[in-house]
Amino acid sequence: MTDTTLTILIVGLLALMGVGLYGLLAVRNLIKVIVALQILVKGALLALVAAGAASGQVNLGQSLAATVIVADTVVAVVGLALAVQVRRTVGTLDVQALARLKK
Amino acid sequence: MDAWLVALLAGSVLCAIQAIRATRLLTAAIWLAGVSALVSVALYILGAQQVAVIELSVGAGLVTVLFVFAISIAGEEAMAVRGIVPQPVGLVLVIGAVALLAYMVLPAVGVGSPVIEGSFSQMLWEERGLDVLVQIALIFAGVIGVLGLIGEGKAVPAATAPDTAAEPAAPAIAATEDSTHPAEAVAEAVERAPVPELEEVHA
Image 1 (cartoon, rainbow over the protein chains, first blue to last red):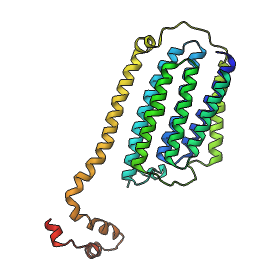
Image 2: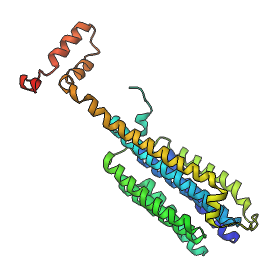
Image 3: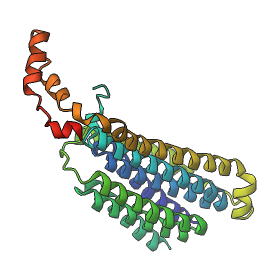
Image 4: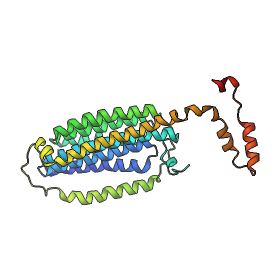
């Protein structure tokens, strides 16, 4: 892998992580918060594989990326189930409404 | 290769921006699937074929189906445009974080040296075997968590179902909590509460 390719990859994954981070800060809908988290993790996934490819250890990067994919999927599943339950009990998906957990 | 990578990464960033900007949740889920698909093609080009296939099937397939399923249950909801953090503050924070990451990562370009390593299966099952055990534990924890969340949602209506005849009085009492005298509040609640018909009570 050339230095130019690695630089392109780093710029791309930083942009992805930036968009995901901004989504986490700016979005109020609980399901869209999970979407933003997924985008953030896509950038981290790309970073792992890019680091592995740049250091000549692409299979090490792949094994770490597989772990990240599993963890990310479990987070998405539990987060979506939580969002559905929040919608049933609180009646809204607005994260501002969850600031007061006491009734 | 570089031109393909630039196109794929630009497309994935564009899809990510659209996913954040989308007003409908279903549209956001579809844009997220686009991000996953483009990232998986980029991973394939980088030589990570196994992870690319996993990402395409899990990230763009399974997770999107789960999003659509959850949105169909929870429903679309119109949300206020204003976010938690004011937009200028959020942009400054994100630009600062990304600049810090770039400052830490970009000097590493050109430092890496080739290392001889084993195959993917050897790396995953032998050298990173603990990770596989953690993945199994994570999957079980996720399943138990989802069962706990969904199961709790089903148990609540079943427990309150036999007491439906007494339910109408409760909101009436709650509505008169600001009265000065408790006896007056109870009297108001009795007046406001709808009297159930005799047939309904026997039924």
